[in-house]
Length: 134
Image (cartoon, rainbow, N blue to C red; front, side, top):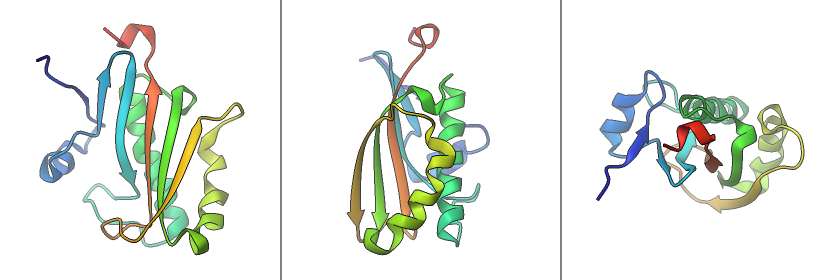
């Protein structure tokens, strides 16, 4: 079996090693990114929801950049929200800052009851540039 081609964003490898998962894996021309939350470098949540969403996107973008991608390369998005009935509108005021222009990626939004102290999580699948697919 071929070893996983893991992508680590700068300065956060210890956080991923402590929690025992990979931030992203390159495979067959795609980048599969683990769910990103609005955590600081130490792993604690941003207390204000809108700041937490921005931080989650910034954490996602750090991984995308490290893999040679941008949000324009994202094909599929899954977001998880605690209490979506009361948080969706606040979250969706921040999303356009990062989302880009149409056509947009596919989206699945899931309401959940728990995200380890966070209120928002985003995971994506992105298409890799030809030069990074090996």
